[in-house]
Image (cartoon, rainbow, N blue to C red; front, side, top):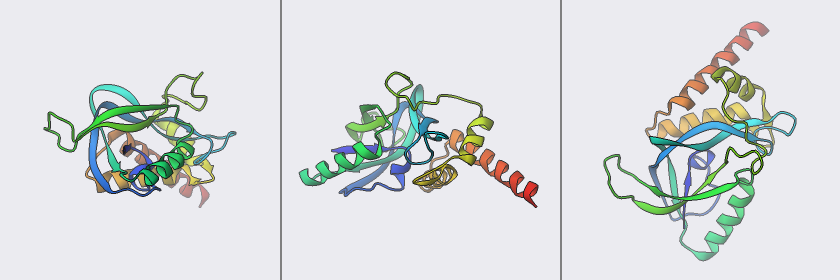
Length: 187
């Protein structure tokens, strides 16, 4: 069993695995369009976490985890079904490790996706301006901590694997700007 992580799974798998590969999936991009009412926000004030949206010609970098033992697979799936419960779809995609590769390193890698269908995914927030998303992230906090920590940890994890994700970097810089303005206002 292979699982692809493009958000917090990059830095915190939370299950036993035999192998971790850095790489990407094709024709998707990472976006902060999913509401989080269970980890990085609340029902009254949802945080924002990443999901994938189809984007022809784009790639989304992340980490792939191979889970071999049947017992580890069962534990990992049970864990992921709880952790990723607000993501209403699973896709099985091709995973690549080399930008020039014509064949995937892994076929049929499992990916959790939060769909934009509000009937199936009541926590989908969708697109908004960079400023509005940043303000929401600055103020949201849930049982797993402040939403901004998720954003900054994702930014750091992506940089550590050599990925510059413009959406994540722009959003992190916008959040830092809001936070520094708040510090100036408070003093």
